Image (tube, rainbow, N blue to C red; front, side, top):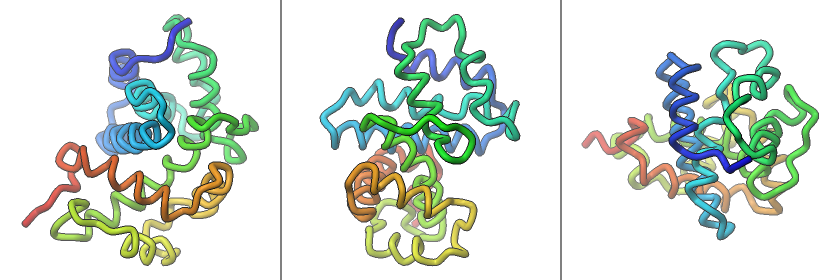
Length: 189
């Protein structure tokens, strides 16, 4: 068994996803996970691949999210720890696999947070290029803004990581800034 690679992740996502917004979400989570890996001094490419593939079963099985992940990854020689990380991002929502490692806790947290960062960036003519934590925090406090993104999950994840939400926001913004144009959240000025 080996760690999932970006090449594997891209191939598996292309085979199981057709909706553009899911590709964009996968890219956003990849970017955020890469930044979190850097924060923790971990393997950036590995964390990015796990982030990219985390919703591999969502389009085909939205009502049974993560129940089919293992079968979709079968035969891929993917390390059990990577599969566990993917499954743990649904903790308390659709799985009972509690995030334990920094990678698992990070994926659990940034999955929802990237949606708020994207939504905030889309509202700004300068996109994410100069998005500051202070302005993101205002949007975060407004429960009607990006309402489908669970602040409860993000707060739980930050508590698991033992990090203030502002610190995680700063890391996620930085990670997503590197992929701003690919994510469609670059400056439009």
